[in-house]
Image (cartoon, rainbow, N blue to C red):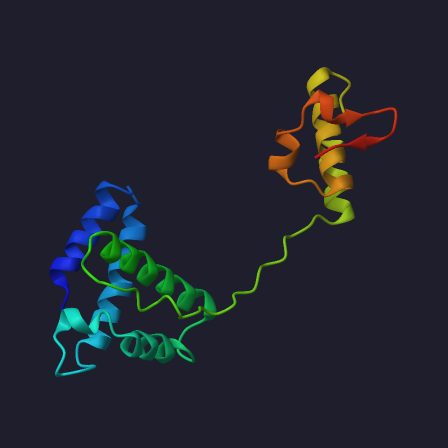
Amino acid sequence: MGENLLGEFLRYLRDVRRVSESTLRGYESDLRQFFEYVKDFDTQAGPEEALEREDAVRSFVSSLYGKLKEASIARKLSSLRTFYRFLLKRGRISRNPLSTIRGPRTGRKVPGFLTLDEMDALLKSASGQDFLSLRDRAIIELLYSSGLRVGELVSLRVGDLRADRGIIRV
């Protein structure tokens, strides 16, 4: 079911969106699993019509719970959403059956942190008095004491520093 649509979609991902081979394999695997599930969902509707049935899509998504972790379910839903947006854009379907289906809430991982000993060792690694050592020490101390993200630190400009007030505008 949907082999032509799948092939067309995978070519689009590879040639237009230029996704990695790993991503391409993931999309293909997710969609093949979905097609296999919905192919026998309604014997009266053809395979292409089953793609537009919200009950078929809902049933597939429901079947994933209890078998997979939330992150895996979210990835499969992402694959399906991308596929359905593609089909809508190409005029292959008239409505998106995923529009009312919500995915699982995936927990965010707490970032790791350095212990005091690790931080001390890091500061000692930039203990010289040359320009680069002083710069590196300032960067390390600023990151550690402020909680800035590296991207925020990199985007700082001299005008963002208010040394007289002890403030940096991020």
